[in-house]
Length: 287
Image (cartoon, rainbow, N blue to C red):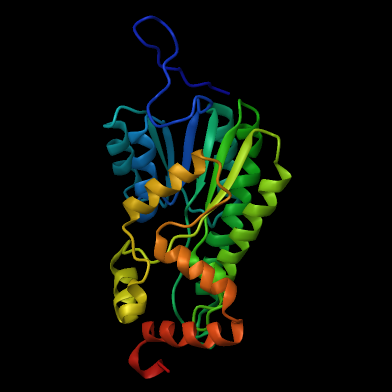
């Protein structure tokens, strides 16, 4: 394993980089780092002086994000990989484990959408499960020995406010993000006392790309409740991760929604939220 060089000050003493705990001495791996929230995570870590290994689809432009991170005075390495290819993903993780010390893992990659289940292709469903469930599990398992083998480290898994309730017309997406929520909390307990802190962040709506923005706009006022920029969510997420929080909910409106979700019965909440989400469908399929 290739340990990263630590920076020293003018006296020759090891300097602690601004904005990161002293124990973070390796790379941060960020998945889905070419755009949206993943890009913001990568740059937020770089601004704090943390070196990054960025993963995203080949041809997605992840190399450009790595150049931007390097421009902030850090080392950044880009890998083009399809996170749905389990064998290829595990091969890449073995390469990372051989060459680099990893102290942080941000499992950000994911997929969503709004469709009636009966209208969904098998490829659509498989894509969500592969990215939201399988890749998170495999990445964590593959890199955990690297993270726990140093002086401790951090894992941040990106769930969603959608994990707080079943939702018609999304069906598989909130279920997959509930998996991330429960997986994170269980793993956190399992790793208690090991020096590895495991957190999950539940972002609300974010305008991360044209398709997501259009779906948020179709929801009307409801879709804008809790709306935050991906830059803000990334900053709050990294702050919460380094603070050792178990569950991170960005924005006071989203925290209020969490309280309501705990109080309002599912028989009331489920049809209400599903009706609002159905506005994301084309006009012929709305309810």
